[in-house]
Length: 317
Image (tube, rainbow, N blue to C red; front, side, top):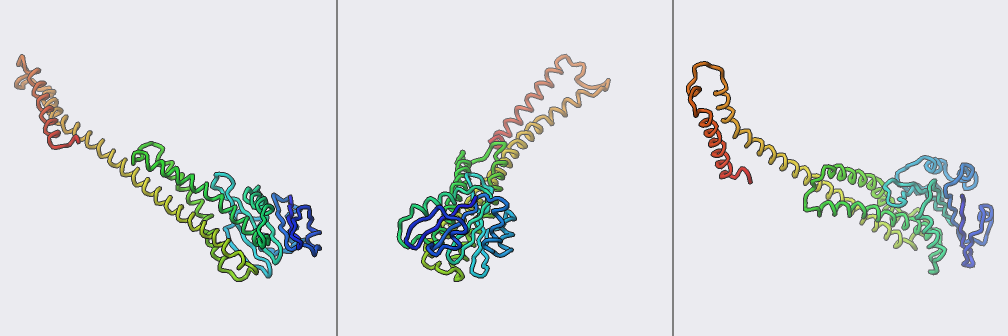
């Protein structure tokens, strides 16, 4: 589906335009063409109608490209990433910025573009109706969708960190590594987007960008904040992982200490039982009437004495 928004020189919105009209019209100040989940025939218009560079068109067809910006003659090509909902799998949004037009191309439905389109048509501020303003609104809405995804992971880590200061569940380490994996996928989108915006605000290849420079810098600031949040989350996952490993090491040491104490107590008892279990015919005490009870009492005395001594040494603390 192709949707077109035009802004005429007499400051009126046009939403009933066709590609032929925007190409031949002299009344339009600028226009925005959105290829929303285009068909094969509609996708071919990138080359047949707009005549964009073949390399840029190839990037539109091959998913998923790294966020980047390329310059082709009088057209600037940008690859952006979008998160729809709370998932961490990115969708690609391609953008062509020309002298008086904006073209967006995306294979999946984009909530950010829908929001940008709505906000653009409701915008009443004078001087903020250019195609660079539309491009800013698209980028701004796409970046705004990053925050709920990162904040969700941040809250999960905080909840885990506040759970009595320790991570004790059997599935805790699995959750930690799952969150870390999602953070790495987010990093593959947010860091390149941050670098892209840095290049954009410092570029002199896009005519008229200076008028909207403050707006694009604001997006760059948002991406810097997101980068810091990602770094903090990664540090939290590392701390939680170390806490989990330390807790399990201490728990294992406690178990081994308990088993060692039990084994040590039973060593002399096993020694005595082994001696009196030998099948020699001539052994002292074998024919003694009270020998069995004396040996059991002696073994009990040895066990209690060793237990008391270990307790005094603090082995059970």
